[in-house]
Amino acid sequence: MREEQMHEMKGGKGHVKLFHLLEKDELSGKGRLCVREVIAPGYSIGYHKHEGDFELYYILEGEGIINDNGLRVTVRKGDVVRTSNGDAHSIENIGDKDLELIAIILFE
Amino acid sequence: MREEQMHEMKGGKGHVKLFHLLEKDELSGKGRLCVREVIAPGYSIGYHKHEGDFELYYILEGEGIINDNGLRVTVRKGDVVRTSNGDAHSIENIGDKDLELIAIILFE
Image 1 (cartoon, rainbow over the protein chains, first blue to last red):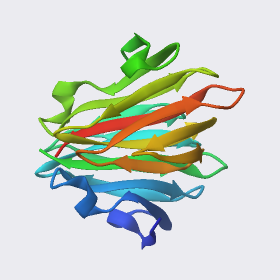
Image 2 (tube, rainbow over the protein chains, first blue to last red):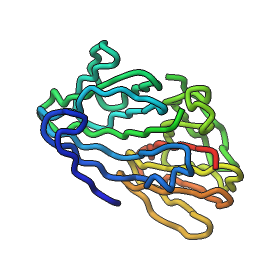
Image 3 (cartoon, each protein chain N blue to C red):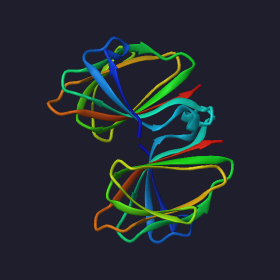
Image 4 (cartoon, one colour):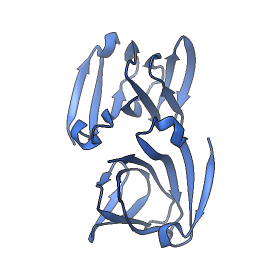
């Protein structure tokens, strides 16, 4: 599984590790990302808008805060958040353990 | 989150619980299923072929055997299996705890 480390991802704090569950060409033109993301305590992915695609977050471990279009939501294991085309979001690890999630971006 | 119970799913043993992470209309025409599946010990999803779509399994908990086009593979937490359009698969819980996975079916 290909691992990638993103620094200050989308203007966020620290770095985020991406483990590619599927590569883009394995998504058969339906999307552009399918990864497990690991965000260390205090780190984040910055607030950014989705244009032409939508994203699913599924929380695997840890505790985070998602800013979903201005609405702040605390998320934990098992929670699902869908960010629609045209909407914006960010996610921050507010716990003391790694925040792990699956992120899938499909085209609208 | 909508819960569904499937009996002898695809000819498998026992029942499988599906928790719909996204409904079909939330997949924007890109796929037809996005669920967390819970398979109790000894239970299974029977061997079936994918035609016109492909499926991703991401193992969340437990231990299973996947028959991937005739090749038997043991899977555990963190494992990923992609079943392509035209290929067949089954999955069986061979552990003593629930086997939990995320299953996503996208159109080819």
